[in-house]
Image 1 (cartoon, rainbow, N blue to C red):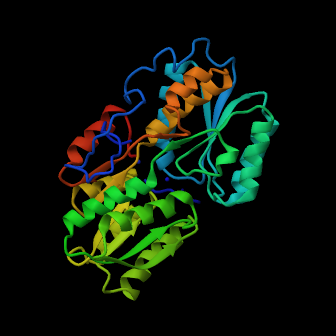
Image 2: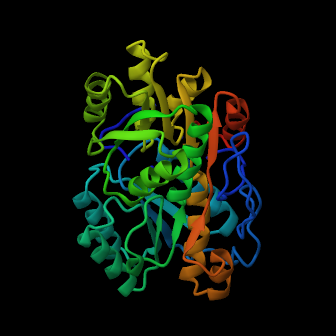
Image 3: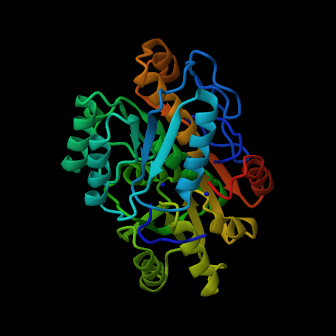
Length: 352
């Protein structure tokens, strides 16, 4: 998922794609129309001839170690397709910063193969307008991680966040059958992925889990830290802290651990930044729902290459008749952490 000025020290193992049932041992089964994460793309998905010197441009919604895995996937995608790719991180972490990066891409449209953007605010008309201008100029535009307005892009590559939230909720219901009150934490609660995750979590966890407050930090790590501390005091009866964006989990875990409240408060979250891993390994974090950002980059390069070349048959095959590629998630606990970590190591990733 997203940080301004965040310098916290995140692909998940080869798992199986989302299904509408509860996960078993941290995984779930569903066939995919996509190639396996480590398989070479077939000729129909990777046209020969490269990209003529142009590059696929990836624009993030903010800045965090989460994007390191996307960048690693981009490099894999370039090796498989012959296309080039670059990433520009929205270090400002705000709407204006993202609009500026999209506007810059328009001025370099002759160099850009296509644009893949993680939309910070789906309702921000300025972002949608900038995406439309790129498309009007003949530059393919897709989204990743956090979707935007459908009319401003061709497709979305990422997580079905509603289903991901549901899977996490189901796992939490299994681990904490008695339920409890919870506080949620996020950078921007209006972001589509945040809204879907919390809605899915409520569906999966059920009525025994009661939301008492959602804390918003505007992707500011200092605010995120103070939110964690405030919640433990203001809602002393809350037994669960839910981190919705990648940096929230590590902050929550360390805060609960530092305040010696691990016996009373469970930390659950999304993603697995590098600094979350030791907290997951020692049980400080009870469970996390991990996306596969490596695949955002890998599949994003492939799809933009197809769209830029006008290979409709190849793009249609990759999309499977939809405008959404679901890269799936993994539910990770202390018990299956060793297998998860081995998967990261195999790809040279420090987190996901």
